[in-house]
Every structure is written in C-alpha cells, then in structure tokens.
Image 1 (cartoon, rainbow, N blue to C red):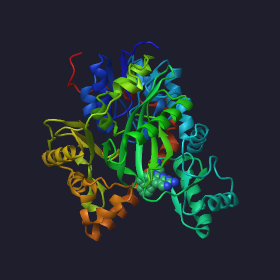
Image 2: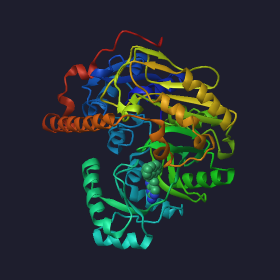
Image 3: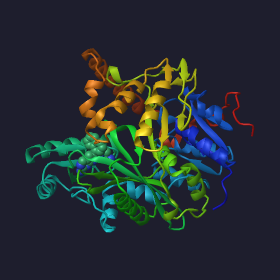
Image 4: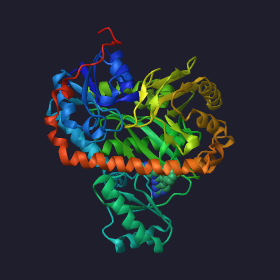
Length: 508
Ligand code: MV4
C-alpha cells in the first residue's frame, strides 16, 4: 500500500478537525467537504481545500457516497477518512472507495459487515470462546422460537435488532406475557430504523457497567489492545462522560478484557483502530456486547493515558506499515476524563439548542485538551449532532483528574446557545461519581434532582420531537421521490466543485 499524501475527510465538526490535525502533523494534505449550512465551519477553515457537497440534509451531503468519492477523485486525494457516524460503518462506502482507487482509512468492508450484523459478531465471540450474555447467535425465527429461548435463558431478556447497535431498538421483556407484543414492536422498529426486522435475544444483565476496549490491528495480523474506557455515564444511550482507565478494572481484568478483544478483532480479519464493547456485572464477570468498527468519539482519553495518537496509528495502518508497538510496549499513565459539551438544554428536557455561538472561551491550561468543532461566531446547525466540543483532562490519578475537570468546566464559557456544561459539573460533583460507583443506571437515578425543569418543558420537548419526526419523514419522502442515493450525479456542479471561503489556516 502506497504512502498517503492527501486525505478527504468525509465528516464535519470536531472529528473532522481532529483528523485534519492528525494529517497535518504527518505532512498529509487535507480536503474538507461541507453542506450549505457548513460553509464557514471550522473543519472547512482548517483544511487545505474544501468542497461544497450539497444541501444540509445528511442524505444529500455527508451520506452521499457517489458525491464524496467523486470529490475525492477530483481533488486528487488518495485516501478517505470517514470519522465517526455518517458513513464510518458503511461497508458499501468502504467498497466504493476501494473501487475508485482510494484507500479507506478504516477496516475492510468484510469486517464492517461481520460486525454490523450483531448475531454474526456473537458467532465470532462464541467461536473464539469469549464470554457473552446467554442468548441466541442467530436471529429468532418466530414467536415460538423466541419463547423457547427466553424460557431457556430465563427472564428478564432483551430483544435487540440484529442490524442495530448502540442501544437503538432494544426492548426489555420481563415475562412470557409481554413477549409477543414486544417482539412485534421490536421487529417494526428494526424494520423502520435499519431496513431489516431481524431480532435476537439476550438475557438481561442488571445495572451493568459499560466498558470498552480500544484495539489496533495492522494489515499483517498483529493486534494489540490499549486498555479500556469506562462509558457507564450515559443518558438514552448517549455518553456524557468517559474515562480511562475504568475505576472498576484491575490489571488482571484488563488483561482478560484486552485478550478477549484482540481475539475477536483477529477472528474478524479486522484492520484499523476499533473498539470491543463489554458489559461488566457487579462480580466483575464480563460479556462481549458488540464491536465498533470506527474511531470513537471518546478515543482521546485512551490517547492521554497511553501517549499514543490514534489518528496517526490509523494512517500508518492504512499505509500498510506494521504496528511499531507490541503489547508489552503499551503502558498506561495516570487518569483521563472526557466531558461531551453539547448544544442542548438539560433544564428544558435536553432540547437541542442550535444557533450562533456569540461568545466562546474554552478551558485551557495544564493537562487540558479542547477537541472542538466551534469558534466564536460559528453556528451550530439544527441538522446534525449537537456535539460542540469534547473537554478532556489528564491527572496523575482519578482524584486529580476530577479536580482538574471541575476547574476546566468552570472555565469553559459558551454564550448564544445552551450547553450541557452545568449538568456535567453537577454529575462530576456527585458523591457516586466521585466514589467511582458507576453504572448505566446511575444517570437515570440522579438526573431528575440535578436537572430540575418545569413540566412545561416536557411538553415543549414532546412537540419538538413530533416536529423533528415530521421533518425527518418529509426529508425522506422528498429524497425518495427526487434524488436516489445512487443517482446523485444529477447534482449541480457547484456541489461537486464549490469554492471554499477565502480564509486559510494552513500555509501549505
Ligand atoms: C444490554 C444491557 C443489559 N443486558 N444487554 C445498550 C447499548 C448497546 N450497545 C447495548 N446496551 C445494553 N445491552 C443485555 N443483555 C444493557 C445495555 C445498556 C443499557 C441499557 C439500558 C440503559 C442504559 C444502558 C447503557 C449501556 C448499556
């Protein structure tokens, strides 16, 4: 595989900025893409070149495979970095890049496919004798099949979408009587969300921790792990705070989790940075959950504690360079925390708060990292994820990291849009967080007291959700009627070769 000289970054926001920075440090030129509402976004200003790719709706811009591949070729890029979200775990995109002679800075399409089907991933875990939650390793065939399995593994059980992941379309079933109705709803949800109604069953693990292992796999069969991240502080499957290491994991469990993660990645023919997710119960039993075949939002906490640059590792791996580290070379020093700063109002039902950032003073100082996609005057469009920035701190131990995060959250000022900063500070100050008593249920328990809001806001949130769904369906209908994803060659040429604003960050 040849050296990479120019990378098209098929993403936006803070992750596009992170990838651009990683490329620039390696002397690799960068090409940004942007939708009509992102003309002056930070990633556009920071890249060496940038091209308009279409309207704000993701399906017509950041998700348009044909447009992205065409722009990459036209710009003379030799590789594509997908970031996370959008097309990062889309096997067809990886294949389209390869077919156009572009290096996809991610795993082989076959590994994306294997892990995208959660039952196929479970078959790999079984084959590698990695512990997993009791349940099926194939989609359930019918209601009778489901009832037999549910009785066998014992209630409560979870119904999960085979093509789902990240908690979407999951359903908890506590008894035989609930099973049929839940199956019907889960299948319908899976069909509308993933275009595939296949579901499987797992025994439900009560109050688990969500712990994931970062791995690196090169194109020569070497796989190493970089330890775990603790991701139990989630609200509705959106992580708010992540840390490395986990306060619950000792050296012995770390080694077992790491070996299990490497075995799974190896069996899947995985190449690239990747993450293997586990549930861990109160007795430190761990169970394979799923594998994420991308660079994750929370990767910086691993970087801070291992001293490694994961984007640089991705670039080397994609160039075919063998891993320069063996497992024994990976060491962990101190503690890192990451807080996600979103443009949402936690005191008004977590309603998205798009708009213009009228004032911005990010936290800085010793051992503080601000991975941001914003600047003063920038706008947060309503079409995308509300993540503004990730605030990451390092300390010599967990207590020092918590003190530093408290200090940094106090410094971080954003005006013009509402943010999650105040509630992040309250979670960090909570006795259970401070003591490391973390579980996926912790936030559900403590948030009501931390985010008092009048019932009025609940009504507003419901109305907003209905409007958003209406908007989504309208966009989908318009898209289906006029622009099929494979026929976007009909796009105006300005989308393919738009001009970037005349502000240049680099000197290249
Ligand atoms: C589970 C589980 C308990 N038992 N599966 C959620 C995200 C996706 N990756 C899998 N998830 C879970 N799967 C079994 N068999 C608990 C979670 C879970 C969770 C569930 C409810 C509320 C918050 C949660 C946060 C993380 C994981």
